[in-house]
Length: 186
Image (cartoon, rainbow, N blue to C red; front, side, top):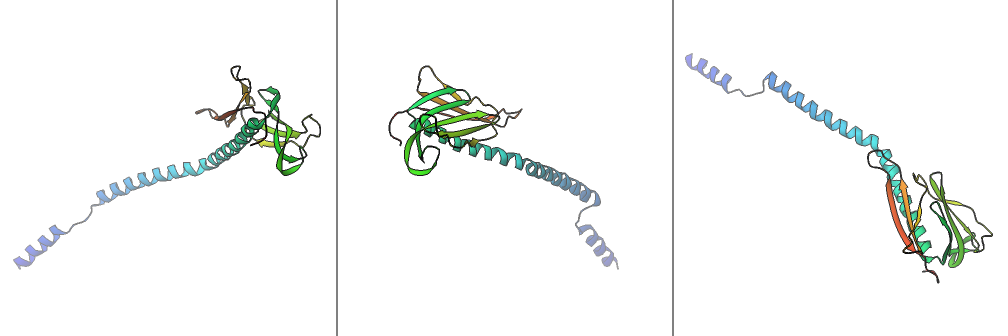
């Protein structure tokens, strides 16, 4: 009988497991970690629309910046210029100027006008007549001073597009420039 009692005590001592206190501590730590992960996930989900809007504005701005600088490079002369407007004679693939798209480029007057958070592009005949419709090239600008010139290089036009002003980081700025060239389009 004594053997049976010793054996029962040995079995009770060798039983492994978690105490109630250990289980409560583990559950509390797990809940804190899970709560932190959920908070981070919810923050990312809430900021996604702002991020997508900013990425879209930057993509639109890059396309507009490329188009403007290409037309400056092909341009024969800048007729008038201010920080918010550029009028130049350049080659455009349209027939006639301001008309339907074409495979051949002809010289036309192109006007970029920036105001009220957007830049528009208008194409007209080289003498300024037969103006086509204005099309929006880029939106969501926070600064309408887009065009700049240097006295050192009078034929160079700098272009700077600034988007979505943030108090923490400031606006996102895309900048490029080109020198006017006369001659046939490239």
